[in-house]
Length: 87
Image (cartoon, rainbow, N blue to C red):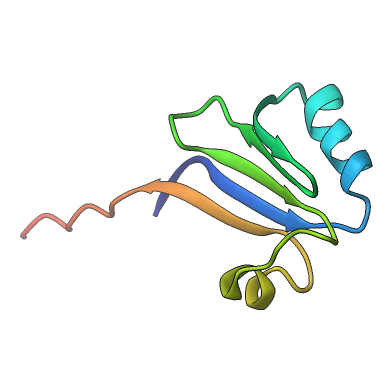
């Protein structure tokens, strides 16, 4: 597999304000969307590549409640494997 870039990262945190400041002010990511206890930052690699920060009082979907339990969830964008040449 040929990993091209970070496609998406999501994390839940009890320190929502500090975490959003870190991604915005230290890493320099552009805020795409922000509401109470949820922020989305655009990644520069491609359209629709984001970092999502979810605070403790965010409304949970089934996916978020089941997935964001112990740490960040990461999605990598990759090139499809190429078939081996015929010999």
